Figure 1 (tube, rainbow, N blue to C red):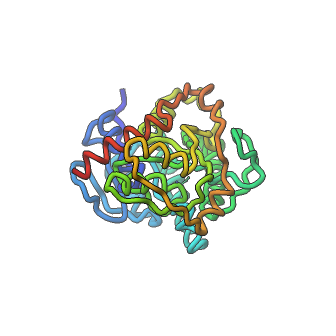
Figure 2: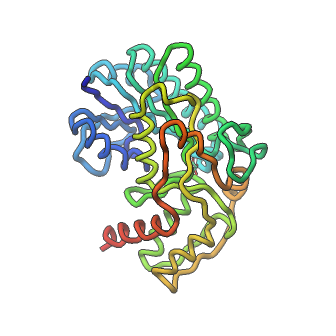
Figure 3: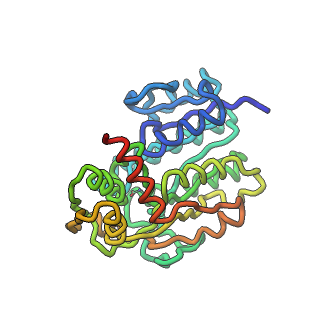
Length: 314
Ligand code: AKB
């Protein structure tokens, strides 16, 4: 079997932090390189400082280290993106195009680029949003994801690049904090509950959103990347579902462990973003093509988050 060398761009982010050890486990610690703007807090893996908007620096790394696969996880997310739309567009698109070009130039084996439920907007059905629903996003982050999906398809068709993608729901994890997203409340709430605090939520109590626990998100990513190429029939991005819940339902679930815990609802500008997104996702095409099956529902995810964070804060 050919030896792969994997580069994770955005390795210090929420998904990168959890994905890196899993890739090390599969390919060997020496074969996985994390790259990000800043040095990581934790050591224990090969790391290179990289500003992925700089095409030459990225090409240099790919050539010098014999990179064969890239996971491109760097992006400005939905809420932060709205504070400077043009800068968000520039960063999200420039880094994507740099990755696509370097993958084409150096004939990389595989590339993974995440998309998001943020690709959908008001025209899509809110419940069980299908794979092929119309894409009319309300945020610049969503616009950049729709454009990225089309660029990915273009590079696959025109250059034969094996590029694969998932439309992640909100990802819930204990390993690190997400930053700049609209679904971030669903991680922050656990930290406050475990620390013995109450929580102030920036979304209204009945805001139903699609979410996924990190273990499922990582397993989906690896199963997609390991599937035979002829099983991958969607080259834009696959719908992916885990569970859906509201802030009120999550609060009730957390109260099973911390009965005195309360949430106060103070919706801000992120409410409008959440209202433009699907409430649940139909991922039957991912299930059909490469056998996707989520394992975590709301009770199991809550139990796991509280268990892991309790250990972390002790
Ligand atoms: C965000 O909230 O912006 C992200 C996402 C759903 O893509 N977590």
